[in-house]
Image (cartoon, rainbow, N blue to C red):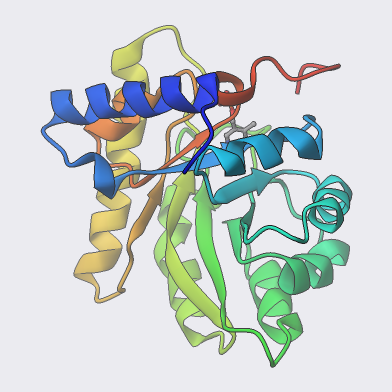
Length: 231
Ligand SMILES: *Cc1c(COP(=O)(O)O)cnc(C)c1O
């Protein structure tokens, strides 16, 4: 039996509604709980309410939490910017890295993935709105990076991750998500077997689901505002 947690209940309901509107089966959209800046106990609580996938954007913060939660069967996703001197930690301690955006990082992750672990699941992060301050491969570079990922022996390319430009206009946001989906479909058309379209956060879950997201990354709506700073 799962324990109840209000945030988890709310997000599940919201996701069900979004799926109903989009004519989709809620079982095809997974919730990735983003607990960055929140203490490990929040993750334990959400785990108790049934969530299994957790995302972090800071390496050290994630490693600390993993140590505190080593008794739980969590699937850990890294979703933050990647410095190449941190790839060994990522290759060793995560099940997924969703923010791969360049070939150097890709090859280091592949080379550093321990032999006794299965291939590292990755998504390519796409800078869909070409924002200079954001990481991610530009749309025209996606096909080449995907081809490199397919050649990396210890990497399993699962799909794309993106964060659209922040906008008050839901139509703009939805258009960004649509362009990510088109890239995803283009890759599939080229023969890549992909199953993960990681898009949608607390502010734009509905638009992402409309455009085919299979994984929504939710922080604020699950855990409340992040303690301390704006990020
Ligand atoms: C923080 C973060 C999220 C979650 O954002 P919320 O608005 O709190 O739901 C999702 N994706 C990435 C990459 C993040 O850094």
